[in-house]
Length: 92
Ligand SMILES: [Zn+2]
Image (cartoon, rainbow, N blue to C red; front, side, top):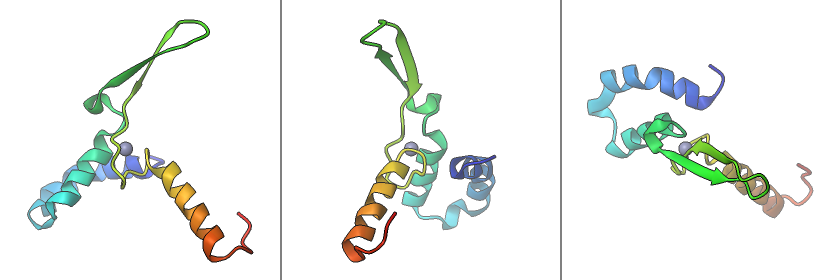
């Protein structure tokens, strides 16, 4: 277990079993998006290499803005932009 997604995936079932009635519906939706991100639940994308013509497959991302897997790049970019706009002396 080495990612946030792994931790959420490991503990979400028990968490939802224990607290489902107290968790807002949108939180449950986020948990389901994160646990299904880049798995067979989200489906496959097939790519064709322009050079060799081979087909490559990968699981689709969930696209949820809270997902640490598919949104981490956007988060890093946002943090970088915020650091520059608020304190131009910070070097990242
Ligand atoms: Zn995702």
